Each structure stands twice: as C-alpha cells, then as structure tokens.
Length: 131
Image 1: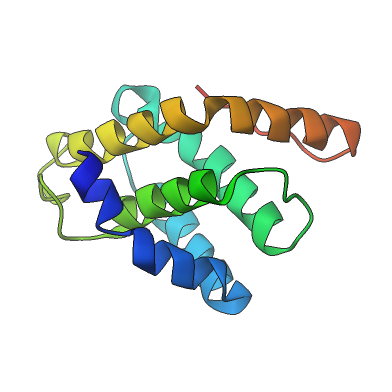
Image 2: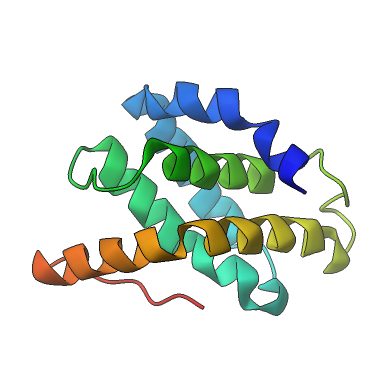
C-alpha cells in the first residue's frame, strides 16, 4: 500500500505548489466523493482532508509538516485515479483499496488533523466531522 501512496508523491508536490490546479483538483474530489459509497466509513474522512489541504494552499493554516501534507495529497490522488489496485467500477469492492489508502494516511496524520481541528475552532471556522 505504501508504494501506491509514494507513487503519487511527486505529483502531490507539484499540486501543492500550484494553488489554481490544486483547487480544481479538490473540486473534482468533492464531486467524485458525492458518487462514492462510504466504504466502512474510511472514505468519510476525505472531506476533512480536503478542508485541510484547501486551508494549506490558501496559506490560512500551515502548521503541518510538508511530509504529512504530501501524504494527504498523495492519498487523494490515489482516490481520484481511475487506475488502482481494485478498479473503482466494481460495485462497493472497487473502493476497498481507496479506503485502505485513506485509512493508512489518516493514521499517519491523525495528530496533525486534530491540531487543525483545534485551529478551526479557535478561528471560528466550520469544523467538519470525520470518522
């Protein structure tokens, strides 16, 4: 699974350095997420990850290590890719690999996300609930 994640790291870095492309990518992720079943609730954390990335690229919130941010964007790239371990067109099971990647990254950045949520509350931002 980690190799699937690291395979997207260079593209993640490029997106993190281009606010316009990243915003278009995040909008695409939000549209895709509306059409996807929430496999074991793991994919339900994606809106929080999107929120974190959006705050980062807008330079509103930068208190997260760049490695964590690259991991988050890499996971979103994997989720957005039509080519992955289990093709997404297979009903329900097609998203199991995506859920596993998101769960892996969530474990890596859980503390960073908790700090981001504290920042959101302290700054009067809407805090998304996650699993």
